[in-house]
Amino acid sequence: MVSRLPLATGALRSRRERRSERLLASRAVRDALISVAGLIGRSVRIANGADVGRLADCVARWDGQDYPPLTGLVVRVGRRLAFVPVGQVVNVQRTLVTLGSARFDLRDFERRSGEVLLAEDVLDHQLVDCDGVRVVRASDLYLARVGPGWRLVGVDVSLHSLVRRLGPTRWRVRPTPDRVIDWAAIQPVGVESGPLRLREPNQSLSRLRPSDLADLLEELGRPERQELLDSLEPPSAADALEEMESPQLRSLLRDLAPERAAELIVEMEPDEAIDALRELDDEALAEVFAAMASQQAARLRRLLEFPEYSAGGLMTTRLAHAHLGDTVDDVRERIRVEFDERADVDGVVLVDDADRLVDDVAVVDLLVADRDQQISKLGSSNPPITVTSSAPLTEVIDQLIDSRRGSVVVVDDERRPMGRILADDVIDALVPERGRRRLPTPLT
Image (cartoon, rainbow, N blue to C red; front, side, top):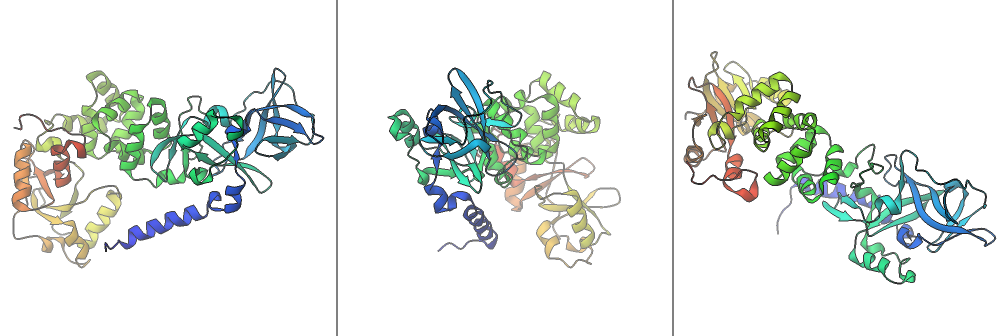
């Protein structure tokens, strides 16, 4: 039996708890689902049974809620499309809408800010299922009465529902609740006019791993992925870009405004930022550099000068530093302040007063040491594993193999630390399926 880490178990439990709190977890809600596709074109009547018109669409308001409320209906009355506010709706059934009165504004319907037409804007459009981490297409949408009103509670993405819509009219009203995704798990994308853009992105989206977000960005079309990218905070968006494959990353960067591309690139790890910049042609590169702060641009320009498959081209310049007199507690606090949870800190470079490399302390040794101990006491009797910035990839590989370490420190001619190359970065360079870099032929 495979044992599971407590952290993973806790995360799984948290996901289960969130799903158990969703509306579709209630049998009563599932049994009362109303198909939007099946409702379109059905009669709209007043309480005495007289027909008013036919339902053309359902209007919901996007205000950041997990389940957007129905705010009204668009009813075809003769040749006009009139808006009926939800306050005048007495009942919504699977084949019929009942109004309390036939008195409503017969002026042609005009969409107001924040309003979404469920059939026109959402049905058959792309959506992101944050639970399943996939791009889906809405075959049907489902409403349910929740409290005093109706809300959008689910989306059906099955081929069965699409076929159902193409069949006889009587088929269209049959919900398939076992195939429905709860709307709280959905991040809408894919509407160019923008009515589906949430003021706040789905919370489940923020919980996805960068690799999952990268997969979603690669699956989406151009306008949809731009919309998804815009819904992410810059650090999360940058992490996702680091995981993308070269063709898709190149295409995405070309589509971004230079200011937006610059914002995301400076959020990336230095080595990943350089990889991203290599995807741009000279004109686009100049525009992105012009959009950066001068110091950031100068730093990245210097790194870009290193050949791609040299140690300088592979290294990250984000280093955890320590001086001989520093205590373990001093260094731990410095790492906490200077590095976030996204950074890979494999070791701490120990330098003398002239900033020359003395030792490379493994981060695991730092974590288990006494907090008042001087970090210089944690050093190894063996010299640190180093290469110069001009060293080819083959030399980096040899050093990692011979030392059996997880990283190599890159130093200049005076042995001042310049950066670090993780074994993971080397694997990315050697295995195309695992990263964006491609192994040159021949390797030199």
